Every structure is written in structure tokens, then in C-alpha cells.
Length: 267
Ligand SMILES: [Zn+2]
Image 1 (tube, rainbow, N blue to C red):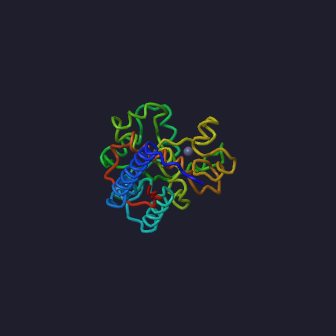
Image 2: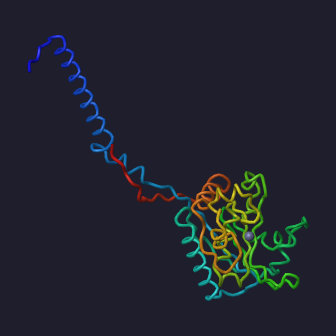
């Protein structure tokens, strides 16, 4: 076989290879710049910002410190943080003991009509601003329902941006002393406080968006009622963190930065 040497072709090939080599060098430089020479670029991507919110507990209708109740409250906060999986961190700021007396179901009823709320006069001298205020009262069994009210959270149905102006009136969560045993009540109420609804109040589209498409997802979810609730979906956790940053930012005390495991891909 014979090759006929074509000088023109040769020069075209040389240029072609030159281009390839130049591209390879450019690629190599790019690759060094993006990762090997500057590892901090990858590290910063792993850093996650977590809002930290303070909570106060008000032990109402009590005159003495009760070590058992204090222990239960601490256990409730530990469980609350566990269930929020580091999307929000809750820290206890103050414990209050106060002799102000009311029953939880009566306070609940007042939120649906009465303009002068008993709670406002009960707490006017003790309520702290800048924290989530959790009031614990005694409760009783409501006969018609054959059920005891465990907790409730007054919220704005719309206009979430009004929370900051209304503070501290809508920074309240109400719990029954008997709800401290079953730690899921505080978690459920915190869900409402940070914008979550009960599954049965939601449209199918919203349920899908919150990862609640299946019946089993719902029955085990913290926003349902039932004996086996034990978790939020990742969509709900993300939603609550977003809600906290957007509408409850005035209650974010500080931010914590943690490194999370994120898969780093080098080009
Ligand atoms: Zn509820």
C-alpha cells in the first residue's frame, strides 16, 4: 500500500491536533481551578444554615417548681428536636411558674369569638417577647366529644406576614399538663405554629406536595391524630423551615451552621 503524502492535509491535521491539545490544557486548568487547587469550594457547599428558635414554658396554675413536670418538659423538647431532624433547633430559654388559673378547653372556646381573652389578662405581666411561648394548663374531658383537649395553637388562616406585627399575641402554643406524657402533642402543635395543616384539611395536590399521598403516610404523620404518629415527611420539614424563615423570622434567635454529608462530584 502506498500513501501519497499530501502537504496540505498534513498542515490541516497539525492544526487540528494543536486545537485538541489546547483544549485539553484548558480543560486541565479548569479542572484544577474548580476542585483540586481549591478544596474549600466543595466544603462550603456542605455547610447548612439551621434557624435556632427559643421556647419558653409557662407552668400555669402552679405555685411551686415540680421536678417531675420539669423533667417531662425537657423530654418533650428533646423529642421535638429529634423529630425536626436539624431543620430547626429549639432551645429552652425560660421556665415560668404562675398561679394564673384557667382550663384549656375554656381558653380554646374563647379564641372563637370573645374579643377580650382571658389569656391576655392572665399573661400580661409575664409574657416574654421574642420566643415561642408555650402555656401549660389543666384540661378536662369534653362530654359531647368524650375527649380531652390536649393542645391548640392560635394561627392566622391567611396573611401569615402579620405574625410579626401581632407578636407576641400569636406566638403562643397551649398544652394540657396531661399532654406532656405523650410527647407528640407539642410536635403536632409546633407543626401548626410553622404553617402545617391537618391532612384532612388539605387538597389532594397539597397532600402530594407534602409527601402525604398514601394513606399509610397520613396515619403515621404528626399532623394526623392517632396512636401511631411518629414522623414528619421531608417535604413538611422543608416547608416548616421555609415558613420559619419567611413568617416567623422575628423569632429566630440565631443561626447555627453545620456540615452535612453532601455527595461531591469532581468534574
Ligand atoms: Zn391540630
